[in-house]
Length: 276
Length: 276
Image 1 (cartoon, rainbow over the protein chains, first blue to last red):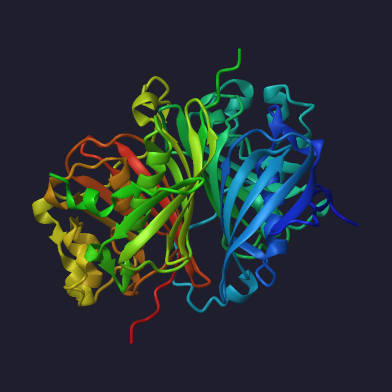
Image 2: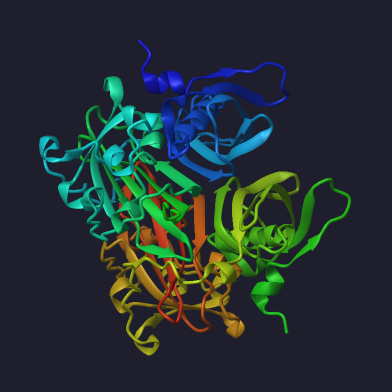
């Protein structure tokens, strides 16, 4: 039984091109704030890159610049392999709809199962966020706060927020620049390196904690998948330290059920416009 | 009088291509650990992109994947404009030597002077590193520690390290995962958005603080230039929280003399191989 995530990010090889081209069908199940979620798009691009790089299944580093808003419907992912090395390979990938570029990405892939020897785990000062048990955390506040009950994205996964981080949902933002939440995909789909790319851009923008409740368009997002995730709930943090000149950086970390940092990202995004 | 940095990163428009191509001459003044410094290469690429994007002089976000080691000598930078918007523009750029790709980059540029209204500086919890006055900091320890007196890169700028961070220079690494230093270019060349790209990859790898004293090849580096820097000494931090599977992330922040965060980067790099 194919999960909703796997079906929505599926790609099929297109014929008749001199490089690699994959067809995708972007579904309306991942809409938020008038557009398709950037993490969903990144996972779709990443699946095509995986197809183009046999033996190197995992996105160690993928950098995406967002050029225009994607819409539900057909899309192609054009992949050019730039380097095939012994342990890593690099490709450029472009998500295109009706001749219009949506996302350009560069990606370096490897095999996390081969990397994860642990022999040189010199250092790990990063610790997972402190979160109360799931039943003490706050579900489903995003749709209520935004009047987004119809946003299809919010049905794709469960988020349960740290109670200290969601004052914005009741009009009392705490101005912390920090969001912490439990996360899991619908239909018990276990996390893997592709779904982690979605997770890295699934929580609401950290600007919510300042009461800026709108959509925050991503300019650039780079993700590093650091380890194969264990099954179970993930813990996710969004943090920002500098909001200036109309832009902010958002750092996301994802921790698996074993307490390991499995993915991290930084994005540069535009501050949300105040909603009228 | 052209500074050494500006001369070394100069590019000239090449004729006869259907897109944008610039010629560069990579000089032997930026050698370290057997290769040319990645920040120097990134600044050279960024200068060509600037030429291709009139009216948008500043790299807001530039993502570079490092494909092979560059060598002193001629190089070309091929630039394809992907989007020209009102406030930002995006281009893809490839640094090539003798037909071999060295770096592939995606870059989104804008005009920091126009962005820096300050009106929406909602948040700034980031604070500059605490550093003793320059005369109490430690100069020139890198070359002594590595036997790299001949590494030309180390003559291109001054670094003065926090005394607490350089135990590795005398065989006593403190295992902190943190390096802090003052920084300025030679010949009083004031910092600007292009030189900040060099600064983001100029300090030794943070793995030095674990006594891992070798060269740490960059796989991917993304830089965000956040503000136009004030003249004077810069403060720079390198930090890493997770070294696993032979890879580590290195976060760099650069602060100007006015105490403002002007640039930040994250790179994914390979752990240095133990030197025999």
